[in-house]
Length: 339
Length: 275
Image (cartoon, rainbow over all chains, first blue to last red):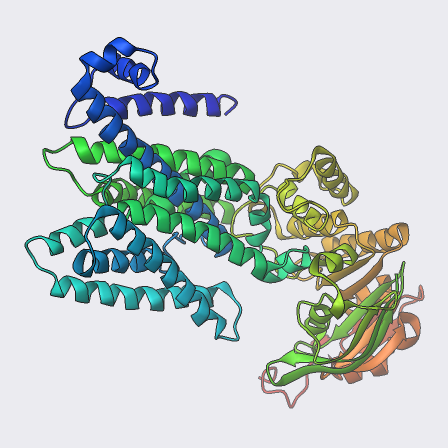
């Protein structure tokens, strides 16, 4: 455990290097180093002789790896926050309807607006935030202030946006629009670009920084509303803060890459296993592992078959069995505690 | 620090649970709040801690109305040992205690080394510093109660509220907690308000008592003067009697005994206890 960060750091650097090498156009590790140096202006000879690899590496591979890393870090950190806020280790970042809203927004843009990547991204972001806002407004109409009301409101709003998405899919042209919507709802980083990174980075980096900075208070938020109030924490104010920051992050990630399943649920579990439940360690660990995990999963998605596999299929193949393992493992641990 | 409650009424929705409550709790003394299930003891504690806003009345500390104080200010004055002790995530006992520093620690900061040492001191004060690294959900119910007590001590407040701290505890741990509370109330000059069901614990450890019956104060004052057999029977039910042992210790026992079996007998009209 003493060398945990050293081991994780080494695994990360190795994984990053491998992800930069593999893909439809494999790049030799030595060439990756030359391309990196050339891109940083430290190997001027390479930039002339490696024009095609340079273009592929710096305009497709690097932004794709970076975007997957950013989205994974943001969704996983948000997942850990939602699990703390709702005091439920099975809570996921899309619990308040952000994914359903973003899906509807993206489908709406593909169908009725200009189906350009940035327009789809903007529409997905706006509707993701709208869905969570509606869930909050619905919950605030109830006299019950418990988090379960918020969860139920999220389910209601999700169902409504899901119905809207299904209706758009029903209307969509099956030859181009429908395929585009389906591919979007299953997520992919194949449209990654520097422009998408520019749109995502200003939300995700400050978001993760804020969550890391205010992570200790999350320990108190797990203790329930009454205990947190007794300890001097104005619960409603802090809940709004955490939900707002996390939702913005998830909306930005989903808007850039579409739906990415399981990451926000399972990565905080792995992080909890490695760093413990204390949130000053859990949030950075979740962000780190999420970035690493999604980067690797995306490399699998783009390299195991001739055509690209949507990212949610890959994350589900790895995520669902892992959650099953957790359920069995947690059950055993609980039984051993009870005896 | 004296806590003064005047004409306090509160409830849930349109249902009043307590009404017209008057009581005073003084520094260095333990005040027991007694009553049957559903009489409003926990509601009273929730009002004092301003988790439940009162419908009417005032709760004053040093002349200041608690309902007008900011949340972090209340947490600097009042600490609470809650009834149910379970954490959805199994933090270490040290992390559980450290949470009580929230009212002092800046929102963007984590507890400093100094705060961590103070938390360990609070744990040592209740004799559980050896549990610091243990998972809270993996220790026994009695130990969890002590962790919650250490957490309230680490909050370093002049007033402490304990909601049935002896529930689920074995005989030895019940007396351990109560003896500890006596020691701490005297040493730290804390105002301690504690809800209890057992009249014997009230007789042995509490300076003052407030008996609540159907949401109203039925009797209040010094335990030695107030807790009589007649008052107990009126508030807790007529099958209770206060005996005095040869050593002068007052002991609450069931009032009705079945001479044939030499076991406590219950109300013959009660369908739950008649055969």
